Length: 251
Image (tube, rainbow, N blue to C red; front, top):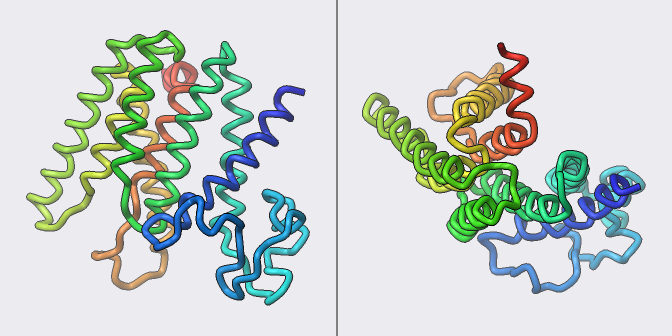
């Protein structure tokens, strides 16, 4: 029953996350306009048209008024949020840890969605996320030692900064933004220095697979960009939950 509650709660939060991500960098705010609307015909959605994930399925992915296709961006965020809420509830050892993981996961989801849409990672999310993770580990809420968490944040950020510097030295172009480095402060703190290698490896493999699929058949891929933030977030969250199991499997 608690997993069902977690899933429903995750869906509701996912709807909010999609609003945050879609309105970032625009004249709109999270609070204004207050109600969701179709960006094509400006129709304000009714309650039945705004049920997370379910409305998208019932309406077959189209606005019920103008029949414009609804971007997959919205239901995917809701789905990911639901899955994370369930996984966090399944693995959390205390209610406080689940709450902390929901906050951390929410920051990761919104930051990743913004990165996919704009190739930017807002400082307000990356820095606040790092503070929250370090604070939760210091308070003993998360299953990670504070020193391990602190070292993971520092070493992880410097490692990514070094990779970015070497890439720019060789290619003469920026291959990774500073937003990824700042994001690493939060995510390195979440995995800790002990699982840092597994985390970065998982993120890199996922990014590589996605890049190959996304660029398949394209003629000019030398200037193509793939946001790294979503893969860093995925790698860190999975490593936090299943890092020990991954290491055991690899051995």
